[in-house]
Length: 208
Image (cartoon, rainbow, N blue to C red; front, top):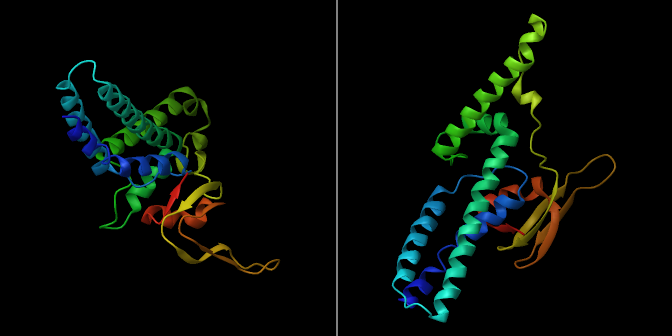
């Protein structure tokens, strides 16, 4: 039974990477519903297998700790996404609305419903508390302007999973020349998120 549990412990690796990327990225990343569903399904199987293990088996407690660790990562991942949706909700909905046909969805159906409800509730609250007391020409608010956007120029730590060449770090200006670097596999760097955002999406780099 324990060997069956052990074989399942490698499954959440993809979720661990998605969790770290979401945790350290300043913006909301593409939803990974398929990974979340897979992890939840595997947790159910792992729990069921542990129920069949004899009490007092030392290995069982180790696997229980691993299950708890995976549950923590899953909760933290989902919580990070909800916090970003609440913080940047108009921009998140705008990105979702403007994505091209065939492009991956930024939000899961549940997250999309939550974001729309959060937007509506915020508008209702603002109108009830403040806007209705304003002059008629000031009784509307542009949420996209009122709510700050994610700071894509913030710096993040990353580990390179696939070698990358000619990454533009700083564009050419009147004061400096264009700055381009190569990223070697396994190397670690501190860089602006905007510079490596496409590499995070493609899986070529891992935020740490």
